Image (cartoon, chains in turn blue, red):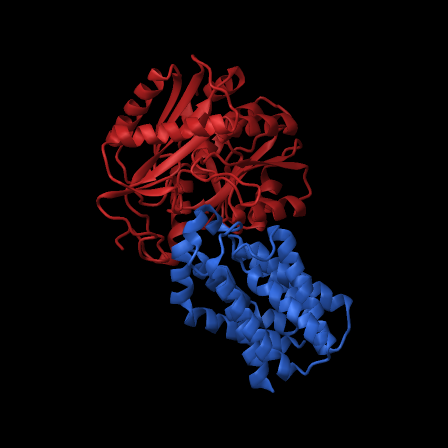
Length: 210
Length: 334
């Protein structure tokens, strides 16, 4: 991965989060505590603040800086979770040197594993992992099949969206919505939604760059 | 939204500056990263550090000082602080006997304090407070929320730490106090997170939210508004039932600390009325209220409503509750 792409992705994610403000906010007001959008926005801005600084770094160093920046600015649960993702992703980029698709799959999976460990959660708990785990599983499968990135991307977007929708009928057992019991049923998880937006944004960016 | 604000993004820093200058005899403010610490560093004691989202003032900044916390790390409104705050605060206040974190049990707070604990060079331990009985505990969920009982934990453990007790003893006492506390809150109106600019939840004039959380999270049930005695009875009974469920035996003549905490917009006039109602009810159950605290101690921005906390005392807890304390929001014996 190139640092230039990482910065473009950060800019695109910042834009996408802002565009989806009202949806993320209303989901979080329904079953969360109303701070998810604000925290994400703060995190995105803080990453753009260090744009110049990371532009001269290697991709893995840039990702590590992003992780640490998110850790010290986002707060809430999303801070440590997103930070863990980027720090582990960076670590995996450092340790491996595979072809782009297999490398992405490996690093993405390490990032997701780090979130699982930090959040002590898995699928079916009405969290961002309901998007991230299916995406990492699919990514692994397609990488093993040596699929072309252009074929992979629409499938990834589809599974991410399916993941978000799957949280609608779940009872939350992790995160702030866990206190709601059955009252959370019928509402999509805001953390899963914001993750899906970020994944879709990066997917579209890759497609547009081709 | 009608609030005293200049710029929404500056609320926290301007408020922290005000707090620190109003109480400059007691505390000092560090801005990068944000924490409040005692102006006179304590020596040779376990360093007590708490923190959490802002919007619950005086929790936790108002409890920094002699006999309570050594430092408090405020997060953004209703958002956990970040690990760099706790780590930097620890470097400032640690005095050789380790660091004890007092953390309210919310996913974000737990994770951020956990990362601080892993990244810090000092011996440390954590007390997780989870006194809110409205959330049914389960091994599969985040579990009960930490609410106003946290103030009692901070006061009692603060006293023991001031006497020079070691990290393990302080942690043990904190866990015991948390175990012997039960709280439940009721909201009459919603709070408004300034950056969001609108009510966190909708509630009608003839409704109350039983078991509300201190961020305006829903509780057990939406119920019809009714007379105070009936609301208070449901609250007290919920706490007592929870003690029973957790196998905490209450015996006749057990001594109780009764904390009636306002969420900010309910006047003291009503808080004392709630106290009166709860104390009378506890008397009929042969429980003796021997210590009390009434006021706004763990708030929820401008929410109207109140919580009741019962703490079952024993000699050790009572002694440490009574010992001198000098902070911006709790002061006695000194």
